[in-house]
Image (cartoon, rainbow, N blue to C red; front, side):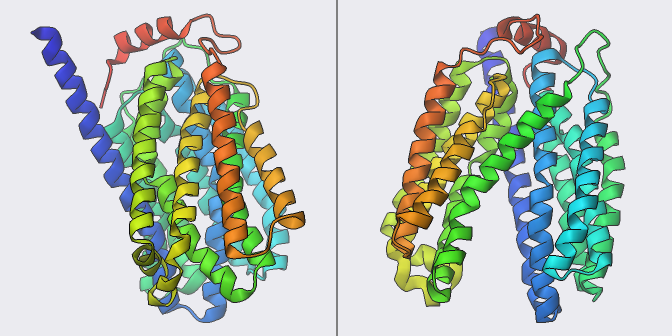
Length: 421
Protein backbone atom coordinates (compact mmCIF):
# COMPACT_ATOMS: atom_id res chain seq x y z
CA UNK A 1 0.00 0.00 0.00
CA UNK A 2 2.82 2.40 0.89
CA UNK A 3 4.57 1.74 -2.43
CA UNK A 4 1.30 2.34 -4.28
CA UNK A 5 0.79 5.68 -2.57
CA UNK A 6 4.41 6.59 -3.37
CA UNK A 7 3.87 5.89 -7.05
CA UNK A 8 0.66 7.90 -7.00
CA UNK A 9 2.43 10.81 -5.33
CA UNK A 10 5.24 10.82 -7.88
CA UNK A 11 2.75 10.62 -10.76
CA UNK A 12 0.74 13.50 -9.34
CA UNK A 13 3.93 15.47 -8.81
CA UNK A 14 5.09 14.94 -12.40
CA UNK A 15 1.60 15.80 -13.65
CA UNK A 16 1.57 19.05 -11.71
CA UNK A 17 5.09 19.88 -12.83
CA UNK A 18 4.22 19.12 -16.45
CA UNK A 19 1.17 21.37 -16.27
CA UNK A 20 3.22 24.17 -14.71
CA UNK A 21 5.97 23.96 -17.35
CA UNK A 22 3.33 23.81 -20.10
CA UNK A 23 1.61 26.94 -18.82
CA UNK A 24 4.98 28.66 -18.49
CA UNK A 25 5.86 27.70 -22.07
CA UNK A 26 2.56 29.06 -23.36
CA UNK A 27 3.21 32.29 -21.46
CA UNK A 28 6.73 32.61 -22.88
CA UNK A 29 5.59 32.03 -26.47
CA UNK A 30 2.60 34.31 -25.95
CA UNK A 31 4.78 37.23 -24.83
CA UNK A 32 7.19 36.60 -27.70
CA UNK A 33 4.22 36.79 -30.09
CA UNK A 34 2.87 40.01 -28.56
CA UNK A 35 6.11 41.93 -29.17
CA UNK A 36 5.93 42.02 -33.01
CA UNK A 37 2.12 42.38 -32.94
CA UNK A 38 2.35 45.42 -30.69
CA UNK A 39 5.31 46.72 -32.68
CA UNK A 40 3.21 46.64 -35.85
CA UNK A 41 0.81 49.06 -34.17
CA UNK A 42 3.36 51.31 -32.48
CA UNK A 43 6.28 51.58 -34.89
CA UNK A 44 6.88 53.06 -38.30
CA UNK A 45 7.60 50.50 -41.06
CA UNK A 46 11.37 51.02 -40.90
CA UNK A 47 11.46 50.51 -37.12
CA UNK A 48 9.10 47.53 -37.35
CA UNK A 49 11.45 45.85 -39.80
CA UNK A 50 14.36 46.61 -37.46
CA UNK A 51 12.42 45.11 -34.55
CA UNK A 52 11.82 41.89 -36.49
CA UNK A 53 15.53 41.74 -37.31
CA UNK A 54 16.48 42.31 -33.68
CA UNK A 55 14.15 39.54 -32.54
CA UNK A 56 15.68 37.15 -35.07
CA UNK A 57 19.22 38.02 -33.95
CA UNK A 58 18.16 37.60 -30.33
CA UNK A 59 16.79 34.12 -31.09
CA UNK A 60 20.12 33.12 -32.64
CA UNK A 61 22.03 34.52 -29.66
CA UNK A 62 19.70 32.69 -27.30
CA UNK A 63 21.04 29.36 -28.58
CA UNK A 64 23.90 29.67 -26.07
CA UNK A 65 21.38 30.05 -23.24
CA UNK A 66 19.50 26.90 -24.24
CA UNK A 67 22.76 25.00 -24.66
CA UNK A 68 23.97 26.10 -21.23
CA UNK A 69 20.65 25.11 -19.66
CA UNK A 70 20.70 21.63 -21.24
CA UNK A 71 24.33 21.01 -20.29
CA UNK A 72 23.82 22.11 -16.68
CA UNK A 73 20.61 20.08 -16.35
CA UNK A 74 22.21 16.91 -17.72
CA UNK A 75 25.31 17.20 -15.57
CA UNK A 76 23.42 17.88 -12.34
CA UNK A 77 21.01 15.03 -13.01
CA UNK A 78 23.96 12.64 -13.41
CA UNK A 79 26.35 13.93 -10.76
CA UNK A 80 24.38 16.03 -8.31
CA UNK A 81 24.78 19.68 -7.43
CA UNK A 82 28.20 20.37 -8.88
CA UNK A 83 29.82 23.72 -9.58
CA UNK A 84 28.58 25.49 -12.73
CA UNK A 85 29.94 29.02 -12.25
CA UNK A 86 33.08 28.54 -14.35
CA UNK A 87 31.46 27.15 -17.53
CA UNK A 88 28.73 29.77 -17.16
CA UNK A 89 31.34 32.51 -17.01
CA UNK A 90 33.11 31.15 -20.10
CA UNK A 91 29.82 30.83 -21.99
CA UNK A 92 28.82 34.39 -21.16
CA UNK A 93 32.30 35.70 -22.03
CA UNK A 94 32.46 33.90 -25.38
CA UNK A 95 28.94 35.04 -26.22
CA UNK A 96 29.81 38.64 -25.35
CA UNK A 97 32.97 38.53 -27.48
CA UNK A 98 31.12 37.03 -30.45
CA UNK A 99 28.38 39.63 -30.12
CA UNK A 100 30.95 42.41 -29.94
CA UNK A 101 32.47 41.17 -33.20
CA UNK A 102 29.37 40.25 -35.18
CA UNK A 103 26.73 42.75 -34.11
CA UNK A 104 28.55 45.86 -35.41
CA UNK A 105 28.99 44.14 -38.77
CA UNK A 106 25.35 43.10 -38.73
CA UNK A 107 24.32 46.61 -37.77
CA UNK A 108 25.92 48.00 -40.92
CA UNK A 109 24.56 45.28 -43.19
CA UNK A 110 21.08 45.28 -41.64
CA UNK A 111 20.85 49.03 -41.06
CA UNK A 112 20.51 48.92 -37.28
CA UNK A 113 21.49 51.79 -34.98
CA UNK A 114 24.46 51.52 -32.64
CA UNK A 115 22.13 52.00 -29.65
CA UNK A 116 19.89 49.13 -30.71
CA UNK A 117 22.88 46.84 -31.24
CA UNK A 118 24.40 47.69 -27.84
CA UNK A 119 21.13 47.10 -25.99
CA UNK A 120 20.50 43.87 -27.90
CA UNK A 121 23.93 42.63 -26.84
CA UNK A 122 23.25 43.43 -23.18
CA UNK A 123 19.85 41.74 -23.30
CA UNK A 124 21.26 38.63 -24.99
CA UNK A 125 24.11 38.25 -22.49
CA UNK A 126 21.59 38.41 -19.62
CA UNK A 127 19.45 35.73 -21.26
CA UNK A 128 22.48 33.50 -21.79
CA UNK A 129 23.51 33.84 -18.14
CA UNK A 130 19.99 32.88 -17.05
CA UNK A 131 20.47 29.47 -18.66
CA UNK A 132 22.63 28.43 -15.68
CA UNK A 133 19.92 28.78 -13.05
CA UNK A 134 17.18 27.37 -15.27
CA UNK A 135 19.40 24.36 -15.95
CA UNK A 136 20.13 23.84 -12.25
CA UNK A 137 16.43 23.80 -11.41
CA UNK A 138 15.69 21.47 -14.34
CA UNK A 139 18.52 19.09 -13.46
CA UNK A 140 17.39 18.97 -9.82
CA UNK A 141 13.83 18.26 -11.06
CA UNK A 142 12.45 21.31 -9.30
CA UNK A 143 10.02 21.83 -12.12
CA UNK A 144 7.62 24.19 -10.36
CA UNK A 145 10.49 26.57 -9.66
CA UNK A 146 11.69 26.07 -13.23
CA UNK A 147 8.27 27.15 -14.51
CA UNK A 148 8.43 30.27 -12.34
CA UNK A 149 11.94 30.97 -13.64
CA UNK A 150 10.78 30.65 -17.24
CA UNK A 151 7.97 33.12 -16.57
CA UNK A 152 10.34 35.57 -14.86
CA UNK A 153 12.84 35.48 -17.71
CA UNK A 154 10.11 35.94 -20.33
CA UNK A 155 8.67 38.78 -18.29
CA UNK A 156 12.05 40.50 -18.22
CA UNK A 157 12.99 39.77 -21.83
CA UNK A 158 9.71 40.19 -23.72
CA UNK A 159 7.60 41.87 -21.06
CA UNK A 160 10.14 44.64 -20.75
CA UNK A 161 10.03 45.24 -24.49
CA UNK A 162 6.23 45.27 -24.41
CA UNK A 163 6.29 47.90 -21.66
CA UNK A 164 8.78 49.99 -23.64
CA UNK A 165 6.64 49.82 -26.77
CA UNK A 166 3.45 50.60 -24.83
CA UNK A 167 5.07 53.71 -23.37
CA UNK A 168 6.00 54.94 -26.83
CA UNK A 169 9.72 54.36 -26.42
CA UNK A 170 10.17 53.05 -29.94
CA UNK A 171 12.74 50.42 -30.81
CA UNK A 172 15.52 51.79 -28.60
CA UNK A 173 13.20 52.41 -25.66
CA UNK A 174 11.76 48.91 -25.80
CA UNK A 175 15.23 47.36 -25.96
CA UNK A 176 16.40 49.51 -23.05
CA UNK A 177 13.55 48.38 -20.80
CA UNK A 178 13.96 44.78 -21.95
CA UNK A 179 17.72 44.80 -21.28
CA UNK A 180 17.44 46.38 -17.83
CA UNK A 181 14.59 44.10 -16.74
CA UNK A 182 16.44 41.01 -18.05
CA UNK A 183 19.49 41.88 -15.96
CA UNK A 184 17.31 42.43 -12.87
CA UNK A 185 15.63 39.06 -13.42
CA UNK A 186 19.01 37.37 -12.86
CA UNK A 187 18.84 38.47 -9.22
CA UNK A 188 15.39 36.91 -8.90
CA UNK A 189 16.60 33.65 -10.47
CA UNK A 190 19.43 33.43 -7.95
CA UNK A 191 16.92 33.85 -5.12
CA UNK A 192 14.54 31.34 -6.70
CA UNK A 193 17.35 28.79 -6.86
CA UNK A 194 18.32 29.19 -3.22
CA UNK A 195 18.82 26.02 -1.26
CA UNK A 196 20.77 24.34 -4.06
CA UNK A 197 24.07 24.07 -2.19
CA UNK A 198 27.08 22.81 -4.10
CA UNK A 199 28.32 19.31 -3.34
CA UNK A 200 32.13 19.65 -3.10
CA UNK A 201 32.51 15.97 -4.03
CA UNK A 202 30.60 16.31 -7.31
CA UNK A 203 32.72 16.76 -10.47
CA UNK A 204 32.45 20.22 -12.04
CA UNK A 205 30.68 20.74 -15.34
CA UNK A 206 33.17 20.63 -18.27
CA UNK A 207 32.88 23.61 -20.59
CA UNK A 208 33.00 21.32 -23.64
CA UNK A 209 29.62 19.88 -22.64
CA UNK A 210 28.13 23.36 -22.95
CA UNK A 211 29.64 23.66 -26.43
CA UNK A 212 28.20 20.28 -27.41
CA UNK A 213 24.71 21.16 -26.18
CA UNK A 214 24.86 24.62 -27.79
CA UNK A 215 25.99 23.11 -31.10
CA UNK A 216 23.08 20.66 -31.01
CA UNK A 217 20.61 23.46 -30.27
CA UNK A 218 22.00 25.59 -33.08
CA UNK A 219 21.81 22.66 -35.51
CA UNK A 220 18.17 22.07 -34.54
CA UNK A 221 17.38 25.74 -35.15
CA UNK A 222 19.14 25.78 -38.53
CA UNK A 223 17.63 22.57 -39.91
CA UNK A 224 14.11 23.58 -38.90
CA UNK A 225 14.39 27.07 -40.43
CA UNK A 226 16.31 26.18 -43.60
CA UNK A 227 13.18 25.62 -45.69
CA UNK A 228 11.75 29.02 -44.78
CA UNK A 229 14.96 30.79 -45.77
CA UNK A 230 15.27 28.91 -49.05
CA UNK A 231 11.60 29.51 -49.85
CA UNK A 232 12.21 33.25 -49.45
CA UNK A 233 15.24 32.96 -51.73
CA UNK A 234 13.76 30.87 -54.56
CA UNK A 235 9.99 31.46 -54.52
CA UNK A 236 8.18 34.54 -55.86
CA UNK A 237 6.78 36.87 -53.17
CA UNK A 238 3.23 35.45 -53.17
CA UNK A 239 4.40 31.84 -52.94
CA UNK A 240 6.98 32.78 -50.33
CA UNK A 241 4.22 34.33 -48.22
CA UNK A 242 2.18 31.12 -48.48
CA UNK A 243 5.22 29.14 -47.36
CA UNK A 244 5.80 31.51 -44.44
CA UNK A 245 2.24 30.91 -43.25
CA UNK A 246 2.76 27.16 -43.55
CA UNK A 247 5.85 27.27 -41.36
CA UNK A 248 3.70 28.64 -38.53
CA UNK A 249 2.14 25.16 -38.47
CA UNK A 250 5.61 23.58 -38.59
CA UNK A 251 6.80 25.54 -35.58
CA UNK A 252 3.58 24.87 -33.71
CA UNK A 253 3.93 21.11 -34.19
CA UNK A 254 7.63 21.30 -33.30
CA UNK A 255 7.38 23.26 -30.05
CA UNK A 256 3.92 22.28 -28.75
CA UNK A 257 5.17 19.09 -26.99
CA UNK A 258 8.40 20.70 -25.75
CA UNK A 259 7.34 20.21 -22.14
CA UNK A 260 7.85 16.45 -22.55
CA UNK A 261 11.54 16.95 -23.28
CA UNK A 262 11.96 19.39 -20.39
CA UNK A 263 10.51 16.90 -17.91
CA UNK A 264 12.28 13.87 -19.42
CA UNK A 265 15.80 15.32 -19.74
CA UNK A 266 17.01 14.70 -16.15
CA UNK A 267 15.88 11.08 -16.35
CA UNK A 268 17.44 10.65 -19.78
CA UNK A 269 20.70 11.88 -18.29
CA UNK A 270 20.58 8.94 -15.87
CA UNK A 271 20.31 6.40 -18.67
CA UNK A 272 16.58 5.72 -18.28
CA UNK A 273 15.68 4.12 -21.63
CA UNK A 274 12.04 3.72 -20.65
CA UNK A 275 11.76 7.49 -20.30
CA UNK A 276 13.03 7.89 -23.86
CA UNK A 277 10.41 5.47 -25.17
CA UNK A 278 7.62 7.19 -23.22
CA UNK A 279 8.79 10.65 -24.34
CA UNK A 280 8.86 9.60 -27.98
CA UNK A 281 5.40 8.04 -27.63
CA UNK A 282 3.93 11.20 -26.09
CA UNK A 283 5.53 13.54 -28.62
CA UNK A 284 4.59 11.20 -31.46
CA UNK A 285 0.98 11.08 -30.29
CA UNK A 286 0.81 14.87 -30.09
CA UNK A 287 2.29 15.15 -33.57
CA UNK A 288 -0.11 12.58 -34.98
CA UNK A 289 -3.03 14.51 -33.54
CA UNK A 290 -1.84 17.76 -35.13
CA UNK A 291 -1.25 16.05 -38.49
CA UNK A 292 -4.74 14.54 -38.39
CA UNK A 293 -6.25 17.91 -37.53
CA UNK A 294 -4.38 19.60 -40.39
CA UNK A 295 -5.56 16.89 -42.77
CA UNK A 296 -9.20 17.33 -41.80
CA UNK A 297 -9.17 21.11 -41.38
CA UNK A 298 -6.21 22.38 -43.40
CA UNK A 299 -8.08 25.44 -44.63
CA UNK A 300 -8.96 26.45 -41.08
CA UNK A 301 -5.37 25.91 -39.98
CA UNK A 302 -4.06 28.23 -42.71
CA UNK A 303 -6.80 30.76 -41.91
CA UNK A 304 -5.79 30.83 -38.25
CA UNK A 305 -2.09 31.09 -39.12
CA UNK A 306 -2.30 33.73 -41.85
CA UNK A 307 -5.83 35.08 -42.13
CA UNK A 308 -8.68 34.46 -44.58
CA UNK A 309 -6.49 35.28 -47.58
CA UNK A 310 -4.58 32.02 -47.11
CA UNK A 311 -7.46 29.67 -46.31
CA UNK A 312 -7.52 28.40 -49.91
CA UNK A 313 -4.05 26.89 -49.50
CA UNK A 314 -5.04 24.49 -46.73
CA UNK A 315 -4.05 21.53 -48.92
CA UNK A 316 -0.46 22.20 -47.91
CA UNK A 317 -1.20 22.12 -44.17
CA UNK A 318 -0.52 18.43 -43.68
CA UNK A 319 2.98 18.76 -45.20
CA UNK A 320 3.99 21.49 -42.77
CA UNK A 321 2.38 19.87 -39.73
CA UNK A 322 4.02 16.51 -40.48
CA UNK A 323 7.41 18.18 -40.86
CA UNK A 324 7.06 19.87 -37.49
CA UNK A 325 5.87 16.64 -35.86
CA UNK A 326 8.92 14.76 -37.13
CA UNK A 327 11.31 17.48 -35.99
CA UNK A 328 9.66 17.34 -32.55
CA UNK A 329 10.75 13.70 -32.39
CA UNK A 330 14.23 14.71 -33.54
CA UNK A 331 14.34 17.29 -30.75
CA UNK A 332 13.70 14.57 -28.16
CA UNK A 333 16.28 12.27 -29.74
CA UNK A 334 18.96 14.95 -29.94
CA UNK A 335 18.43 15.82 -26.28
CA UNK A 336 18.67 12.12 -25.45
CA UNK A 337 21.99 11.87 -27.32
CA UNK A 338 23.34 14.95 -25.52
CA UNK A 339 22.18 13.45 -22.22
CA UNK A 340 23.96 10.19 -23.07
CA UNK A 341 27.22 12.06 -23.76
CA UNK A 342 27.23 10.89 -27.38
CA UNK A 343 29.99 12.22 -29.62
CA UNK A 344 28.91 14.78 -32.19
CA UNK A 345 25.17 14.49 -31.48
CA UNK A 346 24.37 17.29 -33.91
CA UNK A 347 26.20 15.71 -36.88
CA UNK A 348 23.03 14.19 -38.46
CA UNK A 349 21.33 17.59 -38.35
CA UNK A 350 24.18 19.39 -40.11
CA UNK A 351 24.40 16.67 -42.75
CA UNK A 352 20.65 16.84 -43.31
CA UNK A 353 20.80 20.62 -43.64
CA UNK A 354 23.54 20.47 -46.27
CA UNK A 355 21.72 17.75 -48.20
CA UNK A 356 18.46 19.71 -48.09
CA UNK A 357 20.09 22.92 -49.32
CA UNK A 358 21.85 21.12 -52.18
CA UNK A 359 18.62 19.37 -53.18
CA UNK A 360 16.60 22.58 -53.20
CA UNK A 361 19.24 24.55 -55.10
CA UNK A 362 19.97 21.93 -57.75
CA UNK A 363 17.13 19.42 -58.02
CA UNK A 364 13.80 20.31 -56.41
CA UNK A 365 11.15 22.30 -58.33
CA UNK A 366 10.95 25.81 -56.90
CA UNK A 367 7.32 25.61 -55.82
CA UNK A 368 5.61 25.57 -52.43
CA UNK A 369 4.86 21.86 -52.76
CA UNK A 370 8.34 21.05 -54.07
CA UNK A 371 10.20 22.64 -51.15
CA UNK A 372 7.64 21.48 -48.57
CA UNK A 373 7.79 17.84 -49.69
CA UNK A 374 11.59 17.94 -49.69
CA UNK A 375 11.57 19.43 -46.19
CA UNK A 376 9.22 16.66 -45.04
CA UNK A 377 11.46 13.98 -46.55
CA UNK A 378 14.50 15.56 -44.88
CA UNK A 379 12.74 15.58 -41.51
CA UNK A 380 11.73 11.92 -41.91
CA UNK A 381 15.25 10.83 -42.84
CA UNK A 382 16.76 12.88 -40.01
CA UNK A 383 14.36 11.32 -37.50
CA UNK A 384 15.19 7.83 -38.75
CA UNK A 385 18.96 8.32 -38.57
CA UNK A 386 18.89 10.14 -35.23
CA UNK A 387 16.54 7.56 -33.77
CA UNK A 388 18.78 4.71 -34.87
CA UNK A 389 21.83 6.38 -33.33
CA UNK A 390 19.98 7.11 -30.08
CA UNK A 391 18.78 3.53 -29.75
CA UNK A 392 22.18 2.03 -30.60
CA UNK A 393 24.10 4.28 -28.19
CA UNK A 394 24.43 2.43 -24.91
CA UNK A 395 25.31 5.50 -22.87
CA UNK A 396 25.81 4.71 -19.20
CA UNK A 397 28.86 6.85 -18.55
CA UNK A 398 30.25 10.16 -19.60
CA UNK A 399 33.88 10.55 -20.53
CA UNK A 400 35.66 10.98 -17.24
CA UNK A 401 32.71 9.74 -15.20
CA UNK A 402 33.26 7.06 -12.58
CA UNK A 403 29.56 6.40 -11.99
CA UNK A 404 27.37 4.25 -14.20
CA UNK A 405 24.01 5.84 -14.97
CA UNK A 406 22.12 3.52 -12.61
CA UNK A 407 24.48 4.32 -9.73
CA UNK A 408 24.30 8.03 -10.48
CA UNK A 409 20.51 7.85 -10.40
CA UNK A 410 20.50 6.19 -6.99
CA UNK A 411 22.92 8.78 -5.67
CA UNK A 412 20.95 11.76 -6.96
CA UNK A 413 17.54 10.37 -5.99
CA UNK A 414 18.79 9.67 -2.51
CA UNK A 415 19.96 13.26 -2.19
CA UNK A 416 17.15 15.19 -3.87
CA UNK A 417 14.20 12.82 -4.26
CA UNK A 418 12.49 11.92 -7.54
CA UNK A 419 10.71 15.21 -8.05
CA UNK A 420 12.06 17.91 -5.76
CA UNK A 421 9.84 20.80 -6.76
